[in-house]
Length: 238
Image 1: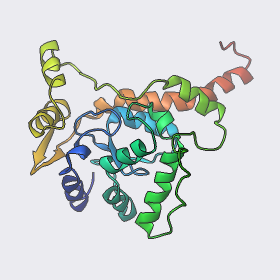
Image 2 (image 1 turned 60 degrees about the vertical axis):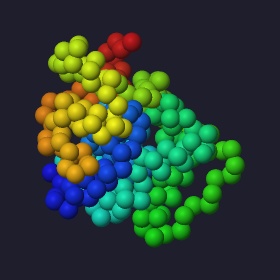
Image 3 (image 1 turned 30 degrees about the vertical axis):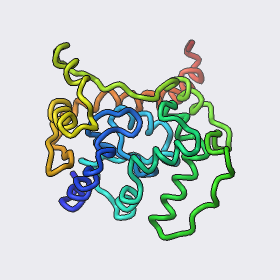
């Protein structure tokens, strides 16, 4: 669990309504963060971010992990609004699939810039005009290409409904998470969170709710190595 100072820090961060919704999917009350970009993301989006590798997106929980001062500083200097506005200026739409979006030259530059600001170091040279939307340099590995195919089209990630009734789910879906009342109800109903002042502060989420996403990430990372093992063992693999 996070310490009291860190919990208070994230509570203040959520006074910005943009930080109360997932930067990628719009899901209310995200409890995960891509430290590399200083943004708040949902558990579903965090699974896709983890598939990118820590060199692209380092993911931490805002309720369960311990936080280093440098990482808190990156979150303080970042924020969902700043990152999304920068990408829009670079010609990258919000709807771009997650793996494609964070492998652009703009996202790569932003990571380096944010880290430099937090460390008090020199920022990278500005991007040449009309290049931010292009893929970052370097060829993808076979495993990364497989993950690109697996997560193809993953932009906005749907929020799971769990065991809620159809009527209740429809009612929650129609709420606007940017509106404070809507965000509060979504927090309370979907992830057991409550508001402290104007921030959405977690009171705990069942571990089982993280199961599907974490298993999905583990399976996609292990699958290539398991298939190689079977081939070497001369087992028929499709």
